[in-house]
Image (cartoon, rainbow, N blue to C red; front, side, top):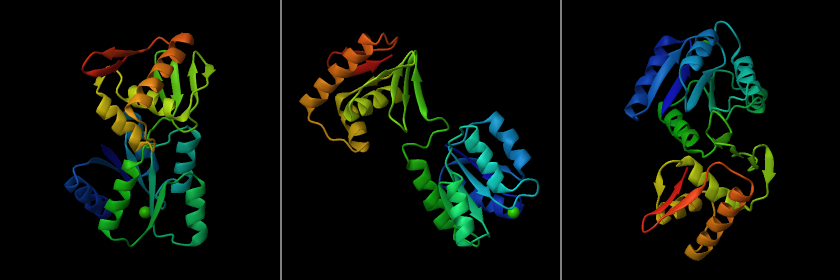
Length: 221
Ligand code: CA
């Protein structure tokens, strides 16, 4: 987990960095919008803490341009602008959370953790494997660009496999992942659903498939 702190107040930025590192997260500091852009080209971040009052470009514009470029990294706005309108503007432009200065560092950390826990905290909303693509927001599944109709549980299963592509997944950990996504299925129903997913993928000509590893679990690759 790496967090990008975009904040021109060096003391504050370092204070946040120290607090974040105590939680076990790595972080980089950008002191301007241009700095931030450079860092984003070099590394991938799990979340961005964004000050709106930057010396070069307004933070709202930075946020807008991130989202326009389909960068969906979670953004927590940190600003002295506490007006309701400012807050709405920030959230409308794709911020995930908003914290007004002065703030308690514990609250910042708690909110940051909440952002990092979100399942959709991805820099990209697509999971891709060979010619198979799953949009984790819309839940659309395509193979070679052709839509495949799948039920909610089937998509959840497929996502769980795609997150663990190339790794053996036990039945228990698969069940846990599905459960985390808000679905609960019996062992039998799970097996049936996996069978359906497998068939739909092979019928559609997907280049990746789910194999059964006897006595261990499954392998998606
Ligand atoms: Ca500032």
